[in-house]
Each structure stands twice: as C-alpha cells, then as structure tokens.
Length: 496
Image 1 (cartoon, rainbow, N blue to C red):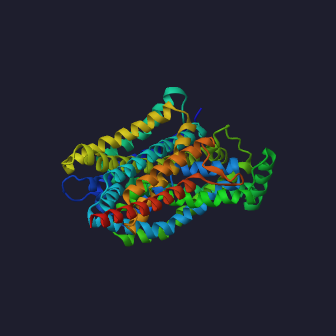
Image 2: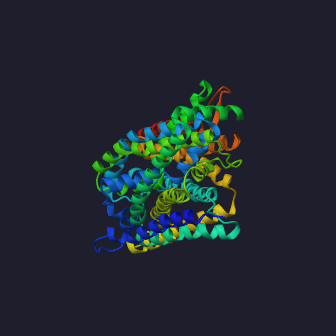
Image 3: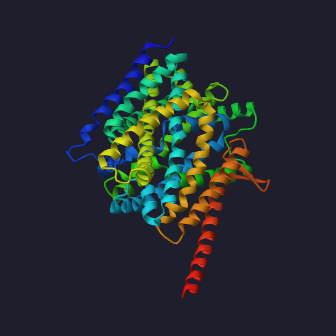
C-alpha cells in the first residue's frame, strides 16, 4: 500500500506544475491577434534564463534521466556515451542554432520545414523533412509517458489495472489543457519548476548515496563486483566497444538538434546572442545527467534488483529504499515534471510542423493565422491523446524500438537542414534521393539487428547505424548533385 506522505509529496509537486502551467498567460502581456508564431514560439521573446531552462528541459527528458542510469545498471560503461554526446551538442548548438534563428527570424519561418521550403524552393523536400520530424517525435513523446509510469510503478504510486491508467491520464490532462490554451508558454513556465526540482533532487539523492555507500570508491567497487557476478558487463570500456561508443556519441549529437522540439525551443529565444549564451551554459544539464548515471552505478552497488526488461526502474527503486517517504515522493514528482516539459514541446512541435508544412502547403494555402493556430491546437491535443493510447495499447519495448529508429531517421535530414544553413550547392532532388537512401538503409540495418542501434561493419567493428546511413545519404546527395549539375550544363550547351 502506498505511503501517505509519499503520495502527498508527489501530488504537491505535480499539482504545483499544473498551476504554474495555467499561470502561463502572464507571459503574454499584449493584445495582439492570435498567430502560430505567438502560440508555438511565445512570440520569440524568451531571454537567456528562460531559454536555458526550456532548451535544457527539452533536451534532457525524464526518460533520459531514467534510461541512462538504467543502461548503466544493465550494461555498464557503454551507457556513458550519453555524456560525451550531450557535451558535443553544446558547440554544435553554439554554431547551428543562432544561424538557424537568424534565418528563421529574417524570413518569418516557424519550422525547419519552412526553412527548407524557402531555401531550396522544393515543396517535396520540405514535406519529407517535416514528416520525418513528426515520425521521429511521436515515439519520443510516448517514451516520456513510459518514464512517468516507470517512476510511479517503482514508488508504488501506480495502482493496478484501469486505476493506474486513470492516474496517468489525470497527470497528463492538466498539461494538455494548459498547452492547448497557452502554447509554448505553458512548458516554459513549468521548465522553471523542472530545473529547480531536478537539480535539487539529484544532489540530495547523490549526497545520501555517497554517505550510505562509503563514497565514490566504495560505490564503484561494489558495482563492479555485481556486474562481474552477472557476467559480461563492466564499468570500463573494452577496445571492441570503443568504436560503437564514439559513433553513438557523435551520431546522437548530430541528430539531437534536428528534432523539431529542440528547434521550436531555440526559435523561441529573443536573439542569437541568447542562444550562444545558453549553449555555453548547457553543460550544467550534462552534469546532472552524469549524476543520474552515477545513481545507476549506486543501484548496482546497493543490490537493487530491477525487473527483467525494466532497468529504467533501478534508480526509482533505489530512491524508494534510501529516502524517507516524503522526500522520495518529491523526487518522483520532480522526475514526473521532468517528463511534462518535453512532452508538451514535442506535441507543439509536431503540430506546428503539420500545420505549416502539410496543412497550409497542400490543403489550405490561404488559411488565416487564427485558423492555423486553431488547427495546431487540435493536432497538439491529438498527439498527446495518441501518445497515451500508444503507451496503453502496445508493449514498452515497441515504443523504445520506434524511438531507436526515430534517432536514425531524424539524422537523415541533417544534410538538407544543417548543411543547407551554409550552402545551396546540394540539389534538392539529390537531397531527396539521399534522404530516401539513408532512411531505407538505416531502417534495414536496425531491424536486421533486432532493433539494435549498433551494427557490425565488415564483421569486425560495430558502429552506430544512423551514422552509416548518414554517410550513405551524403554520398548519394553529393553524387546526385554532380550528375544533375552536369546534365543541366549539358542541356544548356545543347540549347545554345
């Protein structure tokens, strides 16, 4: 039976987040007419602190905070690829996001699909960029709910059968209504609570763990012994694991900035300088992720036995054992709030991409700004309902498998978007051919390996499938551009 203090503390944090979300209207101080830019980008007015909270809260999701220590708990050292990956993201963000923001502001772009449409003059290329983003985002959104459910289950806060499902729906309902009404302003306000709650929670849990388990040396020694007993995994990388570790870190970093929810959070900043300052400060979030990874090692050292196939529950189970009920409830509430911010932004990003690059482009080119906002609100709500239905209707592993594929898929728009920020040399039809090649090759490799993102190359070395697919994508795009340019020059000579 759930302890009363734990449930009370958990509900206090979640209800506090809901109340903050409804207070988001205070960020909107003028009486301007509704617009998609106002609803989805908060009128591009967020300063450095708000953007740091929003972008950090978007990139570092609750599922990340559960999955990374879970991977450490189950697989040892290879799971720490998430740390260099999130460090690599910072210089990439410093270079790419300000330039993306400047171009978007100058031309009134709201989505990266808008940029591709204007930059290349190709509606089909803009469509595949938008649809790839939506396709990759939806399982990522569902994983936020899985993270919430794992936390609630480990803490005994998830009742059995339909009652537990109703708890999940109730937690998500307040966010859905607030996002529907206030757009990006709702998760922006909640991100402040997420930042405070997550930073304080992980510091408190780490301090308690270090005190109980005899410091870092005792934790690592005990964890290494536990991994040795289970066989295979280790807290040290072997030479054979290093190529997979490095390519996962590089490929994941390149992919992250292509997700629509990251771009939406960046476009909401008030200036390129704000984004540069935020990129410099993002490693603070990486430090928090490193502490969560340490908790995965601590769970091993403490003898936590997570359920088979449910390693992401290891840290919540550790918290439940180590901390008083009320404090554990606060930590579970913090992780739950940590899922609400990215979930809201993901639904807004998917809805905005659909409206701008599908609905307006192909169904209603003369849609007024007010109508675009109305459709975006409806699609955003539908995305949340779809994510809830997905979580309840399919196995957890199905969502995880699709998210792994999503990371490979989203990487395939990198040539059109990131390279396109600096050159128009690549031909849009060649980029389409490269995208199709990368999507097909990446999907086949991942599925063939049983939905493992790491695939063997040449029978010896294992590397990240998304990076292999991206290299094929780029090769086809470059070769296709050369062929099309030569054909165009030959045709021009004949015409003369």
